[in-house]
Image 1 (tube, rainbow, N blue to C red):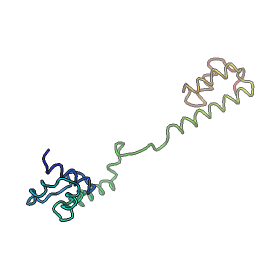
Image 2: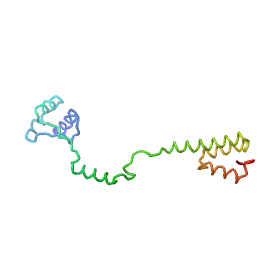
Image 3: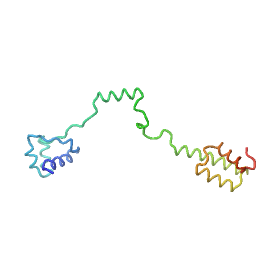
Image 4: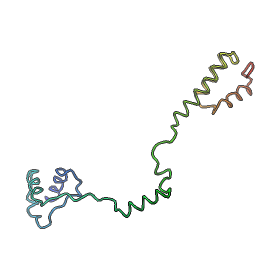
Length: 149
């Protein structure tokens, strides 16, 4: 690592920019290579021997092109989206709550026994049923109900 590289590194930390944005005057390289301390580098920055290059920004032409593509409905595919439109956990909670409410009603009305209730409750938790209709069909097919509404 040469003396200029270490000065460049120090300057980048003092200026708060990346090493690639540090500009050193090519005519003053001999002065820069003699700088050892951060204080020396600060003096060179004050004198204008070392400067921070401006940020590279998106050209207006490229920006306009992107804007027109967005207006046309492009750049809106799944790769550009962030976050979920409908939260899966919320959907799961709504489904499970509905199924558990149905089970509780069936147990309260003495249509299913306590042991059947327990078995079906665990099945609901494990995701065996997608909806109430599926649960009712399962109860009918297996003959678990005394009388199903």
